[in-house]
Length: 285
Length: 274
Image (cartoon, rainbow over all chains, first blue to last red; front, side, top):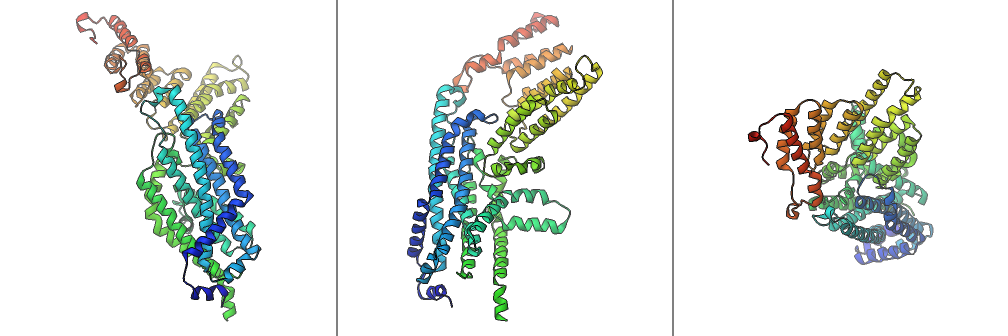
């Protein structure tokens, strides 16, 4: 009988302990150079969107800034989520602090979800900062354009700023799903590197699975079609979070769509988190 | 026996995890499907077959990272770079790649079509020995071949911009300037003028081309129908700005109506009364 399983039978599940693990994870993460470095890069990239507008040929300037800003958020946010989750999890294993923590009366569920909430909070700070910066940048530029070219804004502002915030929230939730997936991989993986590499592979699969569904959904070979359909069910569809296209062209995001996508993410976070706990319970530390 | 089962525990855990994810995937599909339909309706899908050649060049990371517009912009710079070198295969490939990555901006379709229809025939003629060496029939054939490619490309664009007046204008220009097909150009300008937000000049050019084709009465009838629809005074309440009034050129249309009445010998009693 393991120490953790015996302790979990003697003490009830505690949100307080979960909060302590989450708080420590958050503090540990923000002290890391990785977080500060990626945050700085993302902020610099979002802020420099105005300079890069000279490279814009196709879309309107505001659309370009919006695309560029969300691109920076998605790119660096994904990197931060995978790297921070893996690093924070394996630092506990490699430094043997996990043994000390789990020797105390703490559930592995509290440990895993505490880790998740800590990373989720870090990514939340990242998303909030980049969203606020992008919001300020777009507002500033739109105001300047309205002054220079009032005819183009006869019907008022083009950007739906409320939707911009909703997009930031959806990206945060997507990173939550990604963090849960990374924790699931870490729960059975032996090395940090393997977890990071697998995390990026899964990220790519989740983004591209819809293409596989489209491309192979109609193939004649039944086994191949069933395999692709099964893959479509196993991996979450990250493209469903890609609503940023509506921003910058005067189109909004419906409340129903937002709630559906948010619900989709929360279901996956809960289930994948639960699976990570299950896998971690079977792990010898 | 017990130790044998323990050895398979990681495998069973993996199988259980995958099975659980598949079950969840099936269960959440009703939540995902309507949102996914919304996203797909607003966001043109990536054309995987067109991107296969570029996927190995780091494009995937950019596309997945949400940098679709920026990746397309950088490929557009690349398109212009190979265009400057008069490299026909590369230019044509990059033109198609750019619109495969991001088909939303009309700019890419318009300028890509112009490169195909107007520049590439010159490159081909020069490659075959120049304008003095290549017979006129061969030059005409090259023009027709390149125009066909450009027209097909522009027709593909309607899949993403179904009501775009400017695409019809582009088609009309290819017919008019490269193929010297006035009748087809007139029809394309007519279609352009019927689209929402169409530029006012499309309707005027349609009338001029009808005149050129000898269909003076058709041009007269068209302009008579057009004139009442044109804005003549600035009205901010209706969104009619000074620029709109100037672009509509109602006085010019009226003067053309009068010219046509002269040509058609229409009596004063039957003349158009604005």
